[in-house]
Length: 391
Image 1 (tube, rainbow, N blue to C red):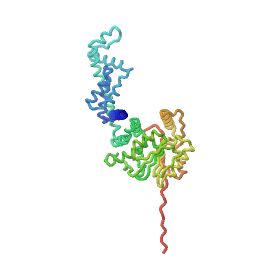
Image 2 (spheres, helix red, strand yellow):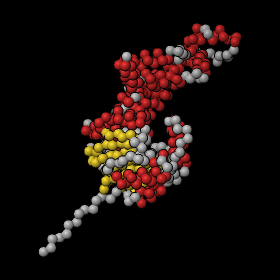
Image 3 (cartoon, rainbow, N blue to C red):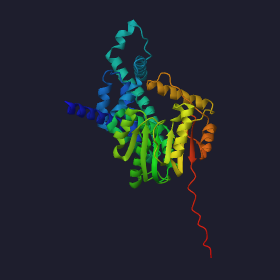
Image 4 (cartoon, rainbow, N blue to C red):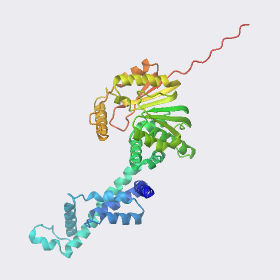
């Protein structure tokens, strides 16, 4: 019985994956949207799903996308859409507009009215399909100007397929909309070797991203102009949420060590690079300072600490960040979340007092949020100066 449940789960997961990923070229997506929009404009209500599946299969496009586009005829809109199609058909035949009242009911349901409705459907459905199809083509081509980056996101998210579609979708969306992850690669923040320690690693997305980057780089499918990805980094993540840490272990297997522990009490291994991405504002101010001191102490000479958090001095962008965090916490079931933010200048001051040379740059490009990235570098070991031999 257990194996049947597992087979059913796997079959459903494979179906959802296929529906979400097939027909992803701009042309295929445009055809799917145009097809669905046209079917949605037809008055054969109750058959739209069946028609979308049949014709999408014939045209080899995504049926889920086609059916989504078919919802142009929403429940509150379809009476007006049907009436517009009926009137359009009449006008194209040279007839006057139909006046809707009880006395004209026979005229509305006549065979001629069915012909008018069919003509109007062809015209209005064709126009709507063309507009939405061309818009989809333009939007998807603009979004896919960098196919190597899209492939990097998809290969990273592929690690999470066996953990469940929710994790897979989350990782895909996070890598698409949050600039921090790709910036770590494109701007060359990470060293080529050593230990990468991610504090509050969540699902381990940065590890999955680096694994995908290595694979695509070897296959010559890596984004052009980017520095080569780190090839000798080893991965260690610490995450306090057991279920999230379990998903990371399942996705990454032996490629990373994922530890379930509270960052405030966890022992930190010596690392070449330490990440603290959107973590510190969940801690009380004293715990923030204690964790930063512990992280700097664990940083190897010449290593780098990368801290990303919101800049509390960023005005409306900070307000947008705080609102988004509250909504996310409510969705996780945290009814009264407490956050402790600081300004970028305050974060920089703390890291400087701990002995790091700090560089600050915005890390909210393409979003309304006030995120900043602070890169704190620990001084490399002093070279051994040998004195000249005494003659």
